[in-house]
Image 1 (cartoon, one colour):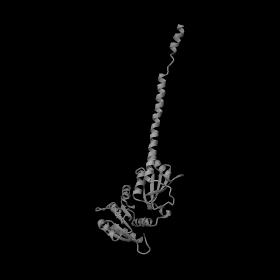
Image 2 (image 1 turned 45 degrees about the vertical axis):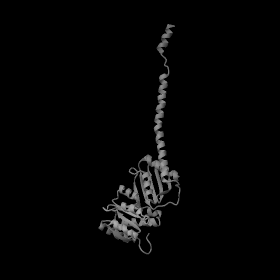
Image 3 (image 1 turned 120 degrees about the vertical axis):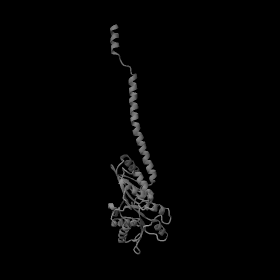
Image 4 (image 1 turned 180 degrees about the vertical axis):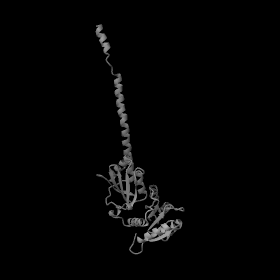
Length: 287
């Protein structure tokens, strides 16, 4: 949290000294006090006596990266809630891995230092106070986005749940335009057209499964005042998959029923006696 007195401290861990200097200067301009370290193991020891407001850490260091640090910090009861922001190459796979490891956010290190510093500030404010919806409209503040062709929706939902994320997941797949709100990894509100709550979540999952395409965007920190989703994400996903399986079986059974009916009709035709007109004519002549 950025207090009125002493500035909040950022622990910046990166082996690229030139990059660290530029990002450190940008963070200071945002009002932070910055401690830089090129040695991840040593930096972790400082948490015992000088805990920062957040850790900003590179993913590509030889000794240990942001993913390893996130797992270690999350396992420490004293610092488990400490925000960890990973800096990486910006790929979708690296982003997903960062969230799964427990990082609070992932930022492409190729962005300008000033943009990264602003993003870091937004994340820390969000953790402490929460964002107003209008603050989250810019694309630069999007924490997670991608294609539903490459990542299935249940996987994205589970990842957000494991990472205890808070925000709004926007989903567009075919005719489905939906919104899921997460609070510390739990789905609290869902809306899709005239549907809301548990029913909306199941409908969204089924639609995305059937379309196998679309896009999603997770807006970090957005919150909903409504609580319409009462069941767990796991229960809702299982229900949706069960309904999809039942629909698939029903569709598979329809051709079988049709062919059985045709087969029965053919069998009846085979046993139906036919009238031999030549035999009838011969019988009349004999008489």
